Amino acid sequence: PIEDLFASLNKHIQRSDFEQAVKVADQVLSVAPGDDDAIRCKVVALVKADRFDDAISTIQTSKKVLTDFSFFKAYCLYRQNKLDEALESLKSQEGNSATMLLESQILYRLGKMDACMDIYQKLQKSKIDSLEINSVANLIASGRASE
Amino acid sequence: NPIVLDLAYNFIDFPSLENRM
Ligand SMILES: [K+]
Image (tube, rainbow over all chains, first blue to last red; front, side):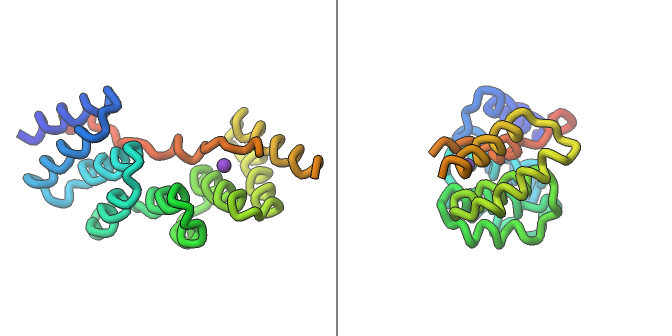
């Protein structure tokens, strides 16, 4: 039954065995096509296995799911250094912390330091009090100061 | 070039499967 497949899928995820997780997610999808959890598991496992092309094609063939995969797609494009396409994929997204972080990383790679810094400053002012965000913002600021 | 942190990666996460098993 599908519950056993999900238990198996969960076990592979816990062990960070992402290739096996993809295989079991596919088994779920063969009995329950379009299952939202299975598709998301497959996409995330593919990303964590550095299989960005496969993650994107899975997203593109799963149009009817409830999950909005724009952030995942943008992240894959970012890792493939397709930076303009990555920004494009983020456009439809609301400005939550994940979206803002990824956007700032893309802008950083594009060399747009001012725009990048603006976002980090917004993140610092937002509810999320992250030491990591603060340290990244400080690194960018000090990098610019030493230019 | 000191900025190599990929904080966005932390937001690529699996759904909870607790009620699917
Ligand atoms: K970065």
